[in-house]
Image (cartoon, rainbow, N blue to C red; front, side, top):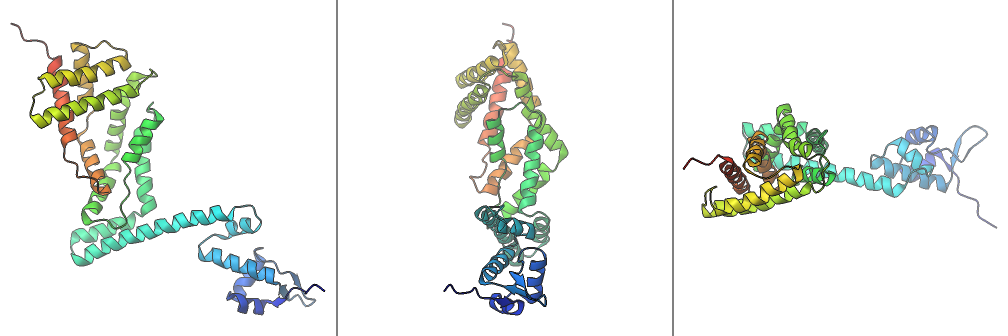
Length: 318
């Protein structure tokens, strides 16, 4: 003969599960744990299957899973693994945020000052999600309406959206807070968008627009070598760098390379270069713990622009 299922009163169910009777009644009335049946006097009765269901509900609530999600899980309208994976990510983010807060508090306790107090207050106003949204908003604005190739936009967004490490130094915290101030500056956001847009708008839908970027990087490598050796922007390396740079840009923009084009290109680069951008990437390097921005890229870019302007100047009369 098959054994009859165990039957539990609501009080017994509370003893077995450790869940208060009041909470069990709430779950039952909310449809999460309907009683197997009621007695003639309307007392609730539950089975071992209901006990297992209640234990699952309790475990999910301890993970901060909300009741509507639990209801869908119990009705098999949602995937338990996906829900738990999402909560794992949420808890991990909370743990990272707490570790950062702990690092700030340790720094404040070790060296109490107005500066460390400001760090605590500032990071208290910006949790991990807020920081992520702040940078996402910046890059959304920078790329808004710019006909940039998606992979290029994604690369800039990834490189320019640093995450604070779990145990940041005071210098990294200060760098991130300054970075947050920069990306919240509407003038910097709009200027960065304009500086990003001019080339892509000028290039239109021509093929191989990425060729200009690749040529710029090669020309920049030549410029770094020139800066390292102390060669001026009127030497042999300048000619090599400019042939790479101006030739590729002229091809992509549908122009003829020559002094007039190089003069125009130099004006565009000067017009669309913001010194604050250099500061931005210095701060990104500091936040991520990468090698300290040593200024060689900036120096090489300035050398390249000087070479471009020099080459575009009219020749002096003999």
